[in-house]
Structures are given as structure tokens and as C-alpha cells.
Length: 511
Image (cartoon, rainbow, N blue to C red):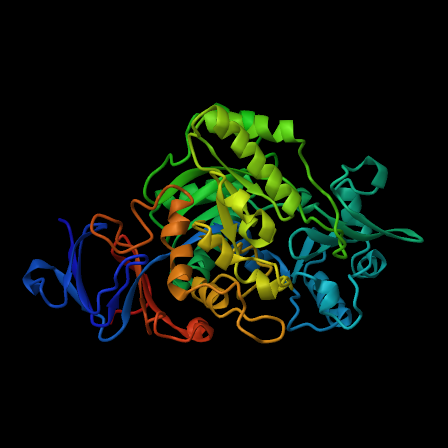
């Protein structure tokens, strides 16, 4: 028997990019929206259950265009949190690491801290290998400042094959002092250990709803860091335990080579409404800087190599997510896509992850004219200390016709960086360093589109999610206030009262 559920939104049923209804009935049948009508015009008898929102606001469920779901939840269970704040000194951080090492005397100890750690502690530097060796002389220890900067003890350097600086690829930066490596590296995240499928399943069960669903996320694209991550997702999907829709992307070459992915057969979008294969994720460049933030060209591809890769994936119908955090790498990715598109019709729309964050203003017309998606993470403006005048030019990109994909890029680095509502508030309420309204501000409605239809479009799913429309999936949230009438700087305080996926409540109490 199909459950027909009627929701009555007294204030607003929001359709981004379309006219909002000041009061509406929404009839859900099964997993999809069957009808939208003016307030109180659908008879209650047509529904098996009626939910009166009693003044709350019905919004489309948020779509997170790029995150690291499995890493975020396993980090809660297996990593040591030493973020800044609350920590303000290396002394405090080293004391916490000593306590954690005593509790876990054997095996890897991985600690998670913030972007630009050296700028946020009194000592104004990163932890030194000698200090970490005193805490853990015989077992591997790593402190991650962000994800792309790692501070390692001597044992971790040995285990990860980093002891000989002359034997490493050019894109890995090694910080040196008079005695040799200080233990600070960039681009070694892909050498760190991952977790078993059973451990990932446990962490997903513990934290998925509180970290993602409770904040209104109903769909997300995750970049899985191992085959075990993918197995964990499949296990929960088979059990019907995923609280949101997941599209997973495979790291190449960490998880598999492109030839191995191509040998599997499925194209992007293979799967069902809850779990789908998204494609592959590669790094055109990496940190784009040294461990201490000095600019560094760490491009990993020649133009010919990157073009061959993207074209081979496209011919197989596989979407490529290209990480690029420097203007040079963003332009390289665009030139490759343009070159392929000049010879043949692209099978899928490929993307530049962080492209909308780090694009040069003068390159916007070139980028906007390239058939490629651009992704932005609004919280980077404050969390990564990147609030330079020309950083993340969302206003100019949207004015140029770019449907920017909104993303949390959640990894565990920024504990409060998962919330789409907060991200929208940051983008719409952005200020300059002097405190004036930023010229890069966007509207709240555009922010909702970034985490709605535009993010769904970024994985070719805007025909079924991202807005409240007849025929689309019944994924929505009930919010305590209307974000369109709130001050952007107050959006982070708007409560998500309930989250629904396929018409079923995932979090929140009945109203």
C-alpha cells in the first residue's frame, strides 16, 4: 500500500529559481511529490497522514556537492581532535597527544587540526618531528593541519616511505631545517591508513544523522578514500540504513587506476535512488603551497596526460572531478575539457572541485565559457583564512552564468563546516576584512540554489531533486524560519526541525 502524506506549509513552500508560494499543500505519494496546490485546497481525505507545519517553512532538502562522508564520520571515532580553537598553543596540543598516546599505546595515532595551524597557535609554527618523537618514539604519529599538510614523527615517516627526500615525487613538499626534515609534509594524505568496512559502517551509523541529516542534507556526493569505504556504503544501502542519498566517487589512483574503474563497466549514475556510482576524483594539483603556505607549483599532470585521462573517462560515460586550487591548474583543467569538447560531444559534464574558490577574476569569462562545472565551499572564506579580496568570486561567477555547485568539503578539518544553512549565510552575508559588505556576496536564494538545484545539476540529478516540484523526489526539510526573510548573518541559527527523504522522516520530531 502506498502512503499518501499531505504537508501543509503555512508560510512558504520554497522552489529555488521559481516563485515561492505563501502557503501551500504538498501531497506526497510514495517517494515522490504528487501535487502542489494553494493552501488548504487538497482535501485531507486524500492523504493517509497530514503534517501541519504550524508556521514553519518547507524547503527542498540540501544537496552537498562534494564531501568526504566516510572520512568525516570515522574521524569522529578514530582521530584525536586538536582543532584551533579551542586549542591555542602547540603546548596544549602536544599535551593532548601525550594523553591520547597513553590511552592508545600501539599503532597509528592520527590527530586532526585546522587549516593554517601555524597561524593559530602562540608558537606560530607547526609541530616538529622531534616533539612528536618524544610523545611516540616507536609508533607512528601524524598531526594533520587541514588534510593536505601533515606533521609526522620519525616512525610515521619511515612507515609511509618518506625518509629519503630524494626519492619522492616533486609535488610532495618537505620542510627542512639544519638537521633535515622537520616532519612537515604536503600531499601525503593518500599514504595514511584507512579503516575496515566494519569500522566505517559503525561510524556511519553513529554520526551520519547527527552530522548531516540533522542539518538538512538529503543528498551528497562523497569522495571515498578506499574500497572499504564503498563496501560500507553498500552494506548500509542493502540494509536500508542510509539516511540520505549518496553518490560515491572513487579516488584515482589511491583506490583504483582508471583502467580498473573502466573494467568494472558501470557509467556515472549506475545504482538506485539511494546509492549511485558517481565517477572518479583526481588531483590536478594538490595543496598549491608548501606546508607553511608559500606558493608552490605541485601540478601532477602534463596537459597531454590529463587530456588522455579525461577523454578516456568521458568515452566510458564516467564523470571526472578535478581538484584544482591554483589558477594555473584551473585553467589547465578548462583547456583540457575545451579541447575534448572541440572534437566530440561530451558524454558527461566534468567538474573542477574548488574551481569557484580559487579562480582568477580575469579568467571568469574563459571559465564560464567552458562546459565544466565549478564547485565552491563557502566556509573556506573564514576556515581556511582565505578571505582575500579576490577569493571565491561567487557574485561574478553567477553573473557570468555559472551555476556554482555548493559543497561542504567535510573531512573533519572544520567541525562546524558541514551545515549548508551556515554556508549559505556565509556566502550571502560575506564581509570584507574591513567589515563592509563584500562585492562577492550573493543572494540567499542563489545560495539555496547552490545547495539545491545547482548541486543536483552538478551530478546530472536536477531532474529529480534540488527543488520542490511535482514528480521530484520527496526530499525536504522543515525549517524554523524562512531564510529568505532572515538576515543572512542569522541563517546559521535557523533550526532544521525535521529532515525527510523519500517522504520519510530521517531526523526531527513530528510537528
